[in-house]
Length: 127
Length: 139
Image 1 (cartoon, helix red, strand yellow):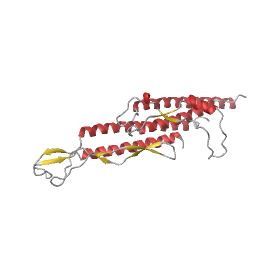
Image 2: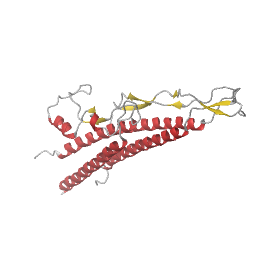
Image 3: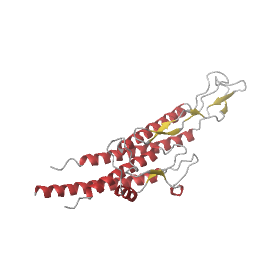
Image 4: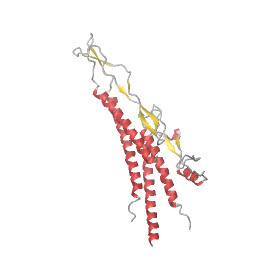
């Protein structure tokens, strides 16, 4: 039987979206912190590539893996900022709320796909 | 720690920071006319607040920390009011260096940032409940 990649893919994307949500809320919380630069997480394609590549096996929680699974946080490029205030802060609340909207719709889509496929799976098991 | 839980923690620290800022704004507004008690005494000095970033070692997220509350070193305004108990020999009174319009603008900005933090908190909550709702509805 072919392995079902769908659930793995969905949980990977949900993990990535959660990490992105936490970065967005961090940006919003720091909307007035002097010198704070907007953070952005690496895109999903990269997180997907990394999870597909070979990973070191961990047999103990204290073992460190070579790369985090959910993407890494980095400062966004300066050109991406909508506005920079005098204090050196370049968080735009509007841009962050747009990102939050994207996250919400993607997360909701993932959840619905997961629910639907799980229902299909169950109905095929029950016969 | 789960990123969504970390996200709520960060949004909560943002709410706390913005409400501390609102507190300082209201202190400034309330004391906008608080002169000194004796002749020639200094009146209320405008307070300022600053935020800083602080790494939360449990979640790896950067929380907002309220920095020390400082004072505005701008000079006091002078008004001529010989009847005031705080008036000096020339009848001049030092009044606080609070500009009400500036404080109101600051209040609006704090309000906006507070609402944005509240919005992320609500959204994180709804993402969490979407996940939990996966458990129900499958008989």
